[in-house]
Length: 194
Image 1 (spheres, rainbow, N blue to C red):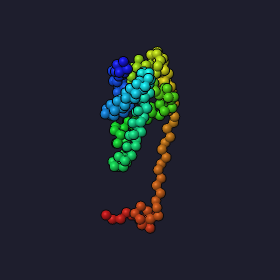
Image 2 (cartoon, rainbow, N blue to C red):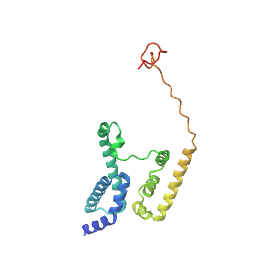
Image 3 (spheres, one colour):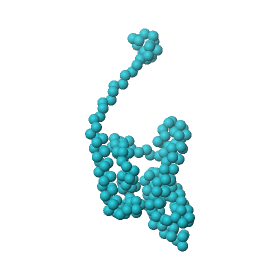
Image 4 (cartoon, rainbow, N blue to C red):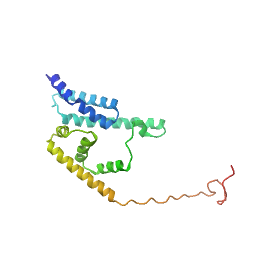
C-alpha cells in the first residue's frame, strides 16, 4: 500500500516540482536531477513513516536547490579561472542587469521571507493560487491576501527607491607619475615618435 500511495503522490506532484526546479535553475538537466533527488528524499521520508504532503516536498525542493546553487558556486571558481575570470559564464545565462531588474532584486531583498516567498511562487515560479495554498498550508483566499500585501510592500519599497535623488558621479582624477605617462623626467615632454 505504501508504494501505491507514493506513486499517486508522485504522479500528482512531479510536474509541479520539476517546473519550480526549472524556474529556479534555468537548466533542464539540473532541474530533472533536483526533482529526482527531492522525490528520493520524499520516498525515504514516507517509507520511514513520515507524512507525504506538498509543503514538505516544497521545503525539501528549496533545500536541494540551495545545495545546487552552492555546488555551482564551488564549481564556477576553477572554470572562471579557465574562461578568464567570468564566473557567470560558468553558471549559464546570467540574469539581466537592467536598472529595473536590479531595483526589483534590491526591493525584494528588503522584504520579509514570507513576502519574498509568495512573490517568487506567484511570479517567478508561476504557481497557481491553489498550488501556493497547498504548499503554504492555507486557503486560496489567504494566498490572495498575502500576495496582495506583499505586492503593496514591494511597490512602496520601489517607490521609495525611485524617489531617492541620484548622486552625480564624481569626476575621475588621474595622477601622473613623475616623468609623465611616457616615462620622461620632463613632465612637459611629448609622446615618443612612432
